[in-house]
Length: 409
Figure 1 (spheres, rainbow, N blue to C red):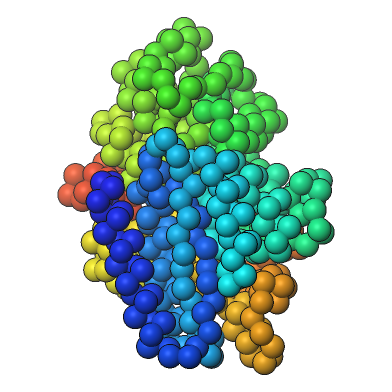
Figure 2 (figure 1 turned 90 degrees about the vertical axis):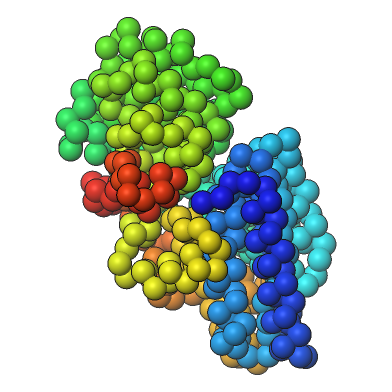
């Protein structure tokens, strides 16, 4: 998968052109403007583009098939990254721009929960619904935080993946029940996602009788994690668990390969993508376990035709977030279809209310949301990186091998 800025820019240009043609072809059809808030620049840019590609395919299909009579979907991109990484403050600024545009009826994103926490109070004030294909912090949908993230009482945040409460928990079950792990050292990268998933893993690991030898935090900008890895080695840890994303994870993987070659290593979906494979590389990534907060999707034979279409169009393979983004877009299309079928205007309020009732078969299976905006499916999948030299070494579909659905899903 390309990671160069030029590739991102080129695909974005083609996307905008495609939507322009669709809009003209539809003549007097009304625009349904959708915000796409992702980290289009910096370390997370490749993953952002794969998400954008997945959503693009769903909206293009809706426009082509005239799924919502008298309406055409149009994407507007918002980059929440500054200085090379995601920035919650920029996400908040983007949210203000979205709600100020009365033609903006819904959004997809953000990639990360920390950005979501900054955006949601603003989006809730403007009653603009948003669906994330990858933000997994339980706080975003927990009723006890309703005063922060839905101050007007109405849910505006939905997601097509389950939460870290299940992702970390189920990996701890896997460590205990399948790998027979007795001791573990837990690391996180200090981000909301990383801390949350590490917390849930740690709590369940203790419940399962795994001895916690320690917990430490990695600086994502640091070039050397050798000191903490030497400490883990001195403690004789059988395993380590990392909560976080590629920024700290790639350096960790490279150094852990040398310092802790025999230690079992696992993480969440923050490492499940081209970014981690390319930045850390083989042999460092070999053997790492990872969870995905959704069913096994990439490499599923049932999605072979869709994957071929994706590759033919974007010249690179999709990842799981491409598929959950496609589902998010399909849910928005279905909500708009429901509203339009009543003969009433498709508005933010009407679209939000319809999303609460959506029940649609997507590439990842049935998508429907509970009263808090969470997808009703709680499926968590477990993968292991096993090198397939016959395929591109940065292709997640080839290098992340599905093992099974996590215990407790």
